[in-house]
Amino acid sequence: MATDQGGQDSSESEPVLTDDVVESHSVQERDGSYHVTIPKDSARDLGISKGDNVLFTGQAGEDRLQIRSPSSVLVGDD
Image 1 (cartoon, one colour):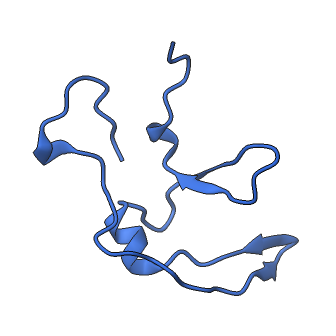
Image 2 (tube, rainbow, N blue to C red):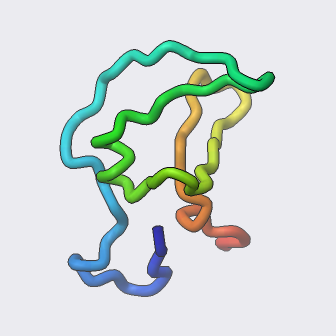
Image 3 (cartoon, rainbow, N blue to C red):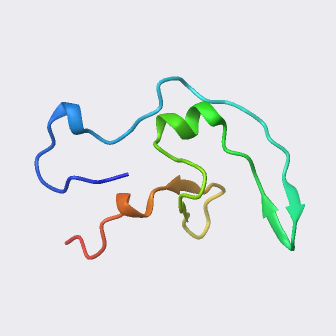
């Protein structure tokens, strides 16, 4: 998923969800790691495909993680 850091044309905007999402998925354990399934429609909407890297972000004291494309995070933004 590419990020345009300048002014964005509406035809080149960030991918967004097309529908509200409220789903429950069980956590699986495989090969010493936990796995959770991303709903396929949501992954498609956000431009996430098999083999893509995703970034989990969260802050201390919060009870949630965000799933993001590594390219969606601006490093050193003042």
